[in-house]
Length: 145
Image (cartoon, rainbow, N blue to C red):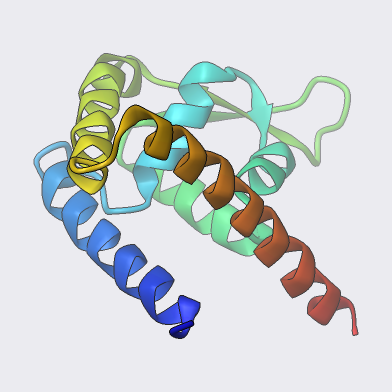
């Protein structure tokens, strides 16, 4: 078996290139679309919940949230029950671009799996979810040591 990480890293690199180009006209960088999607679909999500959902550290979340707020894509409001916690809400700008973001993602998914059967697509998705969960779990174990 070849080094699996080589293929994962290559796919991730080209994923980033594709999304950076496709989202440029929307004023987003390659990874910000994930934030827009999650904030639009879960209005009022906290930064901590977003960090858990995206499997990112809190400092990265805070940095990207600040960029998106500055760009007019989201509003950050203090939580009524805990003033240290911020709830995130999409602006009209973010909500309006959500369908475009979803279309771009679907187009890329179709490109990535263009020679897959439907069964292969389904199996691949299940395997990628398992692989990602394993990666997160084992990397977190290393963080704790």
